[in-house]
Image (cartoon, helix red, strand yellow):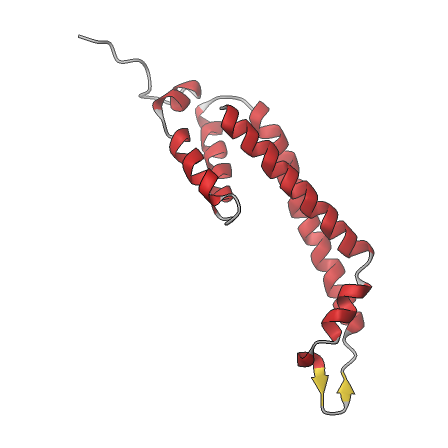
Length: 137
């Protein structure tokens, strides 16, 4: 459980950094929008197509959406290590680990963590059926 707790706080920290970066893009989208508008794909035969305002709007809208997602993951990952330990929550924690496998940055650790998560000791900690101690003899 200590490794999982560390993973949750690490994931919350990464999402906090991403939230701050998207907040910066939301508050000051003009430099990035101007860079996007000056790319060769945005040029036509007569010169520059004025796409700057569209890019500002698109960047701010996208930044708001991604800030909402990052904020949700910050709250979830900061709270999950303190959540209840019952069979239903075992699945939620497992889904959180699987979400971490989707990132190439955290995938190697999450694969190892997923294998640890499926051990009988962790299942017993969450009270899953069929994980009681087997009597010898």
